[in-house]
Image (tube, rainbow, N blue to C red; front, side, top):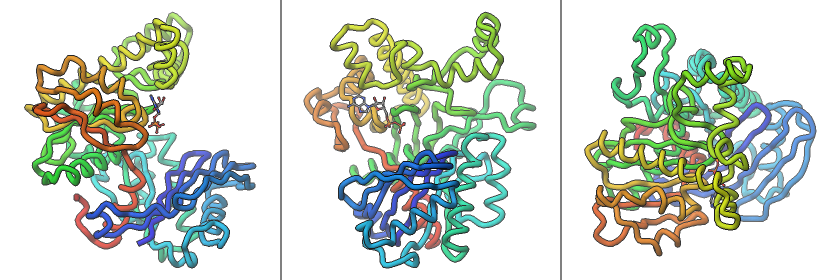
Length: 414
Ligand code: ADP
C-alpha cells in the first residue's frame, strides 16, 4: 500500500510517500518513495523534494493555502519529472496525518470520518496552535483526493493514554481534571512507540515482555517509561513544556516563578509562559544557542562556562528521569536513545549514563562513539545488566504503518 504521510503546521507541510504492508512491517523493508517539505505557505512557498534516495531538489511555488499545497504536491508526485515510480493519483492508496492532540478520546490511530473530525475539533482547546493546522491538512487531502481515499489520524498523545491515574493526574484539586481535563497527556508518542517496536524487532522481545526507558532527545525532549509494551509514564505533561530541559523550553520549574518573574519584569502571564517555552532551556542557560552541536563546540573550543552549564543541567535532568522511571517499573531491560541529540551525540549519551553503574549500566565507550549519523545499535559493555541502545526514530514510518493497519482492519497495537 502506498501511504502519503502528512505533517501539517500553520504555514508548512512535511510529507513522505511510504510503501508498506504487513510483510514489509514485519521484515522492516518498508520503502520511502519520496519525501520533502513545503515552507512559507500563503505566498511564495519554498519546496524541498527528494524521490527515493535521489538528490534533494529545491524550488519555489505560489501556494496560497494548504489545499493548494496538497494539490501541488500530488501533481508533482505523479508527474514523470519527479522520478517517483507512481502511475497516477489512483496509486495513492491512503493518507496518514500526524495530529498533535487526541485528548482522552483518541487512544489509538483511527480512520477519519465526520465523528473523528468533530473529535479533533473538540480537542482544539488543548492544542490551539497545532490541531487547527492538522485539521486544515486533513480537509485539504480529502478535498484533493476525494472521499474514496481513506485518511487516518495518528495522534502524538495516543500512546500515553495507557498511563495509570496515579501517573497522569496532577496533585491539584480533582475538580480541575473533572471540569477541564487538566492532566498529563504526554507527547512524542509516535516516536516512543516506533523506538520501542524497533527495539523489540532487533532483540526478538515480545510486546508484553518489554520494559524500557525511551529518551527522545531532539529540539523537544521527552522520556517515557514503557512496561509490558505500554507507556506508563512520560515527562511531557499537559503541554510539551514539562519534563526534560529542551532547546528553548525549561522543562520542570516551580510554577510560582511565572508570577514572580512576571511581576519583576513587567510581563503578562502569557509573556512569562512564552519565556519558559521560547527563551529557556539550553538557549536560556547558555545565552548562546538552542543547538546542542554548537554548545558542544563552544565548550570544547572556548571552554564556555555557560555552555558547559547548559549541557550539565540537560544531562542531569535526563539522568534523574531515568532513575525515576527505573524506580517506577522496578528496573528495565534497556535505555534507548533517539532524536537529533540522542542519535548523534555520543558525548551527551556518555554524560547521561555516567554514574549509572550502580544500577547495572556499563557503557562501552568505543561502541558508543561509533553510533552516530543514523546508525542503530547497542553501546553497553559486555556483561552490563542494563542495555543501552541508539535507535534512530522514524515517526513518519510509524504513521504510514498505522495508516495501513487502520485501513486494512489489523489490530491497532503491534
Ligand atoms: P526536532 O526535535 O526539531 O526534530 P532534531 O531531532 O533534529 O530536532 O534534534 C535537533 C537537535 O539535535 C539539535 O540540538 C542539534 O544540535 C542536535 N544534533 C544534531 N546533530 C548533532 C550532533 N552531531 N551532535 C550533537 N547534537 C546534534
